[in-house]
Amino acid sequence: MRGAYTSVPSRIAWWAQVQPQRPAIVHAGTVVTYAELYDRARRLAAVLRTRGVTPGTFVALALERSPDLVVAALGVLLAGGAYVGTDVDEPEPRLNAILADSGASLVLTRAARADRFAGGPVPALPVEEALAEEAVADEVAEALPSDAFYVVYTSGSTGRPKGVVVAHEGVSNLVAWYHQAFEVRPSDRMTQLARPSFDAWALEVWPCLSGGATLCLVETRLPESPLDFVRWLAAEQITVCFLTTALAVEMLDQPWASHGAALRVMLTGGEKLHRHPPRGLPFRLYNLYGPTETTVVATWTEVPPRASGDDQAPPIGRPLPGLHAYVLDAERRPVPPGTVGELYVGGVGVARGYLNRPELTAERFLPDPFVPEADARMYATGDLVRELPDGALDFVGRADDQVKLRGFRIELGEVETALNRLAGVREAVVVLHERGDRLVGYVVPEDPGNPPEAGELRRELGLQVPDYMVPHTVTLLEALPLTPHGKADRKALAGRPLPVGRGTDGDQQFRTDTERVLAELWCEVLEVSSVGREDSFFELGGDSLHAMRLANRARERGIRLGADDLFEFDVLHELAASMNAAADG
View (cartoon, rainbow, N blue to C red):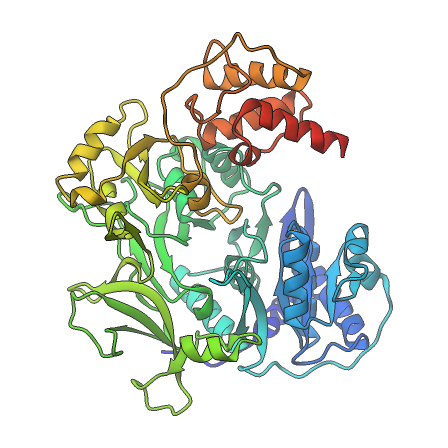
């Protein structure tokens, strides 16, 4: 049953009254109490209202992960506005396009970054200056359920980002479900890893603070390794965390028992989960599914350890209270259980639509004919699912996740599912190489010490799918590369050089000191005897974990190098040139 509507700001205000000195946010040794959080947000709201922010106004956030980012978002909400999540490192053309499209009245940022917005479409207001102002303004009334809460921009097929407008009632429903499903209490400590440009930020922040718990901000973008993350979770006594699928899979096999972790709930989502957790973990694993257009989460299920003889991937479960899930055919008619159809989501979690895109909104947000309310809508997800015998939904793939190769139409999700079912495979991704002429598969082995042979995987896969669906090559990786949002980086995988055999050319003469130092580091990390300036990091056996180790070694020697740099410049002399150019700039 859907509970009575209570806005998120009202919930946080209540906690600030009943437990003012309890920690609301911790970050890098800084503790912000509930009283401090709410006081700062109210003062910011007063300043924003003097700058014209009222219900219906959008305010963009351009801040790094910090307590001030949370204060800024809450301040916007208390002023009656809605925040627009952006990435502080967003390329300037895309950021300006988002700001202009959103119609934001202000962008809250740091004083040090304010010049970046000079001459742009939206004036900047440094959050430090705003919090130092003395302003008095009337309190705004409780937000209406249909009022905008936040806007998150997603990639558009045309290259133009589209803003999804999410309402207060959707977030309130999400919070109420979260509290009940995971028994949130003030003693809980929850992680915050996502960027505000990603809808998972709302899932991490608002259920935590609306439940009186403590939000623990991860200091860096992502932990350097899964084991380092386990240690951090244990040291911070984290009890609930959300991790994207690729990272969660890496975390399942870590030595939890030996680190005294307090974790009791691990939530994961963002991509199809292909595996069950091992037995003996100290926490429960839950698989969440939901497009941005359905307020982060539409369906959920607990994922138990795999039962003997069960080789099926975990389902995506059932809809949240207040939401409806329909599996429909091309004519939008319900299909029988077990039949694949497109998933449509209705109910309170459906977003208001796409900002300034009425035609696209009308195309994807449709009248819901399955409920009596005349104004009810449902969202066409574009995802293919089937209903299992127990009523749970099984994710099959994207309706448009097809490629055409040598005249054959291939559903990549189907190939991935078959590859993930093979013995010895922990996680697999299949992409069409950027050359467009072949499929390539990437596999993380279940046991890195005894990995399956790539050729044997192709032969076994050939017994499950037609030969035209078998990837041209299968490459073993220690871990899948991740996007900044923690999802498997399919674009990076599709652009990786095709395997042509390992080899080095140590006789080549290095032309700069940077090349020479990089070669030494590559030899250490990749455990090879020599490296040439034309060698590729990945052709020498490198992967995302090696890239993280290389970044660590470089940092120890005072060299600024990010793991992501290797996915852009994998050839040694190109990486060296990029680093030199950055240093000179």
